[in-house]
Length: 313
Length: 323
Image 1 (tube, each protein chain N blue to C red):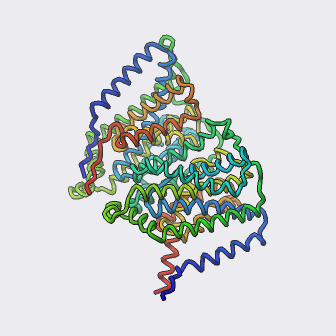
Image 2: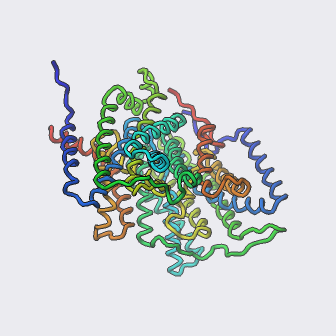
Image 3: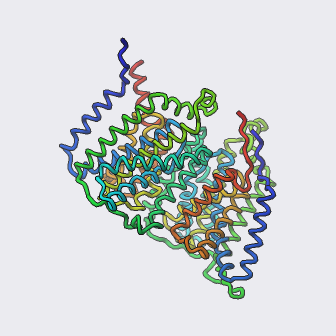
């Protein structure tokens, strides 16, 4: 009997999980909040990576799916007092449906056109909460009926991150993942081997949006339960894309680095003496993005892969 | 692959639609002074969208990528003009100096960060987003986020024609932007450089075989795009004043305008901008549902609608891909 091959990254992932589980015992509330931010971006970047990295469809609109997930949580809790944990799968499901609905027209676009169309989404969706202000609370936002502690958030966010990471890994390693990659590498070749382009492209959009939806839910819980339109602006969508680029498209192992980059940069740059002001944060972020794309076109994941190859030689 | 022509050909229905729209506007302007005022204001805003859209189209035609930093670059060059006027340079001297600086900046960006990764659309999009964040951060860091004011280029006078008031600012904007578009058109149509740039954009391999320096032409294209952006920025400044976010909404409208006209068509970009400006102003005036917070979503509904119904835009032509 042949033992199933254990991928090289698995022990690393297990170790990372253990460290993450032990960390809250040593951290202050502030650092825990930072770690929650990292978890949120981890989930969102994971989702975007499935779409952009594995299926080759670019999206600059994942902030919109986060908004949909976030408002799902806020609305369910505010109006129906639903258990907050239960709103997470709801956000997953609703964002999945929205992702599929967006994915169907997106079949007609590729490349730059898709980038523009999804960008339109990122701009428009948060504005809807201003238009339907009675229901969605306008600029002040809509608050969940209950608020949660730092420890609760930390536990829930990283549990979700772990579950979704495993889910992404399972989806991507099998038949579906191969189909995604085939679509990315050559649509013509994929079709000729019997892969249905519409089904897999739309499926990737749905899964990806669902991940972003969960990230949006936790995002709302982490901002004291407020779902606010300004928090889900275009910048958020750009941050997710930038994080995915830093992480490395088409590989899951760099996602943590990408998430840490986006989640921790405000904290690092505000305490750096060189830059000082919070505008320095943007300078650093922009510089790093450009540098990463020029020097490490495959992001941190590409760097890890190169290191692994070096060690083997 | 079909050959892309410089001026996209106009189909008859589109032409008829445009003519009908023009007749509608003229009749509307003659019968209502508010309508006329909104139309002129819309044209003045639309021509700014059009200039920035044209900048996007210039780059798209050459390399099939979109520069998400185009608006921020325009904003940064406007700050450069502001700094020059602070140093005592007169407005119009600063204006033309800024255009020269913008050209150099555009070329420099293309050569240093775009050229090495040109083969990948996703990489270029991400790098321009990085530039967006970087430029935004640099300007805010240097000048702060508060409003700054430049001398008004055309003064604050208004003209009265019957019951209609036209701002001199709006008319000046129209003249400058349309003038710059005409100059650009002459450059492309009647100069050797223009011919070489068109060749490099349409058939890079063939162009380099007959001795066109394709790489240099692409860099010059980015430079010209930056110049157009600078004009758009300088013309936006009198209405929004100087602030780091001044071009963000304009860039979004420019996206919609460029898609409306067809991403491949320079003439389409300008007309798309004008049409969008007038359309947004008129429905804002006359349709109660279209409140100001829906201005952007409506522009993007136009963008999505065009993409879904006629992805090549009003002036583009359909690309046929052979498998």
